[in-house]
Amino acid sequence: MIAVEPGDPRHPQALALLQASHALMQELFEPEENHFLSVDQLCGDEIRFFTARDGDAIVGCAALALRDGYGEIKSMFVAESARGTGAADALMRMLEDEARAAGLPWLKLETGDLLHAAHKLYARHGFETCGPFGGYEANSSSVFMQKQLP
Image 1 (cartoon, rainbow, N blue to C red):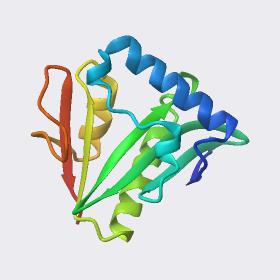
Image 2: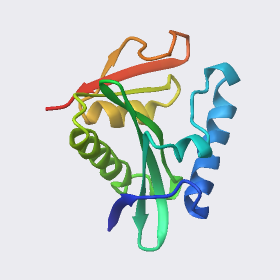
Image 3: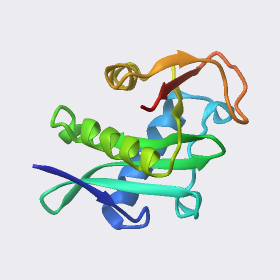
């Protein structure tokens, strides 16, 4: 059974997932097209970091950046071995719950155009495409999505 809880980006298992995510993003996209947060940034006061566990193993992670008027989903990643287990859905529910608890009316995200499984996950959770937000600029590899929270 998957359990989601607040986590530490520096925990060895979480760090390994973040490193795998960063390596994939660097393989797929040019440096200027990568917008992931460093581990140090993920430890900031405005970030809520969560891990998905299957028993003792951390199999997924995600972060919510608290912004002015919205929450931004960052560092969403599930180990390949845990895909299809519900870990990503459980993380999404936690991010939404955390954003609602913080009084944020919107969830927003930027993801890569080649990450089709991520697009399907976000659409399944009610996200729709939108234009750039925050400090982002439109480019050929970014997909921007948002969801209004009830």
